[in-house]
Length: 418
Ligand code: SAH
Image (cartoon, rainbow, N blue to C red):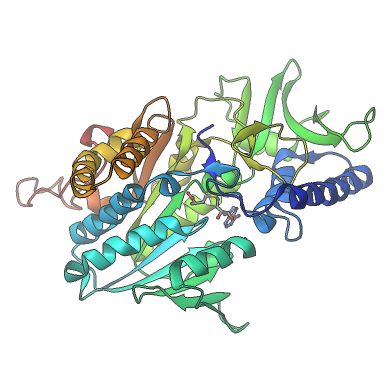
């Protein structure tokens, strides 16, 4: 259970939420029949009144799942260095936006901004702003406390951001509900454990062809949900299953596809890069839909709204949805990416600087969590979208000798170039 983020709601609140959400879903299912897994997941996670993220948010040690930035500050620091390294490789543009999708408690942004501050002599002439895409009012409040010390203000209705503030390090921060609301401009995007929380459709191969998995009310047990198969093909089966598919069970996340298309279009038009980190596979896995509550696996259909629901990210689908507008790199395993980013050196420095045994043990423990292949080292992956010219000189084919080589992209091994 690497899905380790922190919760803000107690058990009593969880139970209340569960009842209300289940009643709401049961009414809906009785009135209009079974719903897709995507619709169920969307309701359970982000329903404006009762959704898991809307009400609780679950990230962190006291919550339902813990994430890498919550485990170690080194994680965010190395990601901050990745952005600075790309900013330099791209010719130090005079301004950039750091755009984070699903910032959780805001810890990752906090760690990145600390690096920006420490390297302020390098960034001194660059105008940096932070743009957070967050649907959960509860989590946006937590982010505002973490990043601005609670000094964020709601924005007037006619502005695209719903809240704004100034970071403790003096950088303007804006909050939005949707990536489309973020102003155009040269941007570095970040999505850590974001895509796995987006709704998936599930499909099962049967003797009669592909059928979509749906969620229905169990007629035998009151207020209990169950999976059923659609009696015939649904529009989603037609649209999302490739004729050459060899698996018997397939999960597709169209919302992730739409967001990647937007990121790729924005990067193609205005420049920048996107870094996506999540657990996932390259189009090979089948049934990965699962729930987490109190750091334990939780039945996905039980007590909706009280548990985190998640599915592995299909990086092959993300690559396809970039539609060649940008180049893509990865997925590369977290332990390889962090090693390439210099985590070992950073650990040595922190160990040398820490006087007490407890801190040293904590540093070694968190390094092990992030890097151990049995823990988060192998199942988490890094994936990047970059402008084509970042990897290949536009006129390389004509005059291969005339250009100096492009600097390698930090974190990614040359061999993973796709
Ligand atoms: N990146 C953080 C948190 C991951 S949890 C970390 O690694 O610790 C997923 C985050 O995505 C939460 O902040 C959640 O509220 C947000 N989220 C989920 N669905 C979303 C959506 N459709 N649009 C925007 N944010 C969403």
